[in-house]
Length: 500
Image (tube, rainbow, N blue to C red; front, top):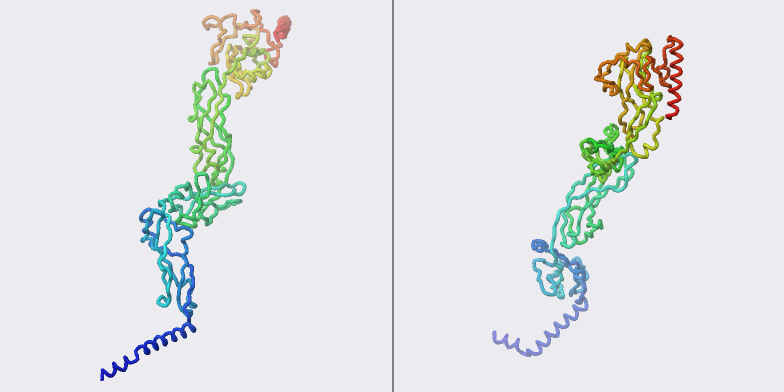
């Protein structure tokens, strides 16, 4: 029976095979007419995987611009192809499969279908992308806060903080090495109270140009900047100094440049500050004979809680002007000397008709000084009758003139002893002894009658003019003596006029 079956199957075998081929062909033709096979092009972005492998090698990679996307062709039945899109495919570049060649670095791309993978045919399933490799650099930067604009009038910028204040930057070494500073700016225009704002850090190079961050990875994108607003005021700088210049020289001026600075702080602290004082121990003029300058850091002399509005004003230049003084001697008639605190019933007689007064100063200032401007005053407070030596007091600008020797020798006489020279005993006042006193200092019987101007010893002393009548003779004297003294006084007046 088996033999019969084989015989039947092999009978007319050629015709049977031809019929099978014809049937298959007809079936395929019918299928293609209803659901034909078509092709379609897709373009998708390349996904990078295993990037850490490149970073572990301390390298930075960058895909060439024309390699970021890949284009491919897919074959499939129309019914399937109409149901898919670009999102149904994935192109992966595995950086662990990087191949370094002389003409460039290559990473293979594998394209896969996420759906209908068995019904689709992807042409050139494996592609390649070109990768640029550079040295990798990673560095941390402290973010510095900066203010834009100016606070309201009477206010200044206080302290500023950034939270967080550290930024990590990674990328190509040639780019990261250009970064000189990272700053975060906050606008304080017309602000009178504290302010806080969220800002984007700015990367700057040495020339304050903004660094492009396209190829960089930043650990932070936004930071918070807080700024306090405080009061401010402008105060002068006062300079003190110690020591004395060389003899014959004088400190003309000691000033700081700038002469004033603006300080800031809490209003209750600023209100108590009228000036910033540089202590005298900082600057010494001991033995100096010419002008000089000295740099001083002002910050160390600011009170606690106070700072400079502009840090650049901290270093000031102190200029000490020292010049050599000229000496001038002014001869002042005794009648131009004012007397203070002379008791009633007493009068004064001077040992000399004139007194020489030494004045030191600059030539221009001395040229403008006159005898009448000196206005010397003799203070006799606490002195008893007798011979004395005291210094005159002058009303001069101490910033322009230095007064030298002004000692004057004089005798205080009581009106009761006007005609009796024997009662004119010297009574020292404890000051410098009278250099005109003759002998060894023992009382001289002729001294009460000596006036140091005309040499007469007749027991009556002529009174110089212009002393408010304090040196006039007692009216109770006899007429002869009055006449003699009046004649002598007129002669003295004529001599004074001739001297002038």
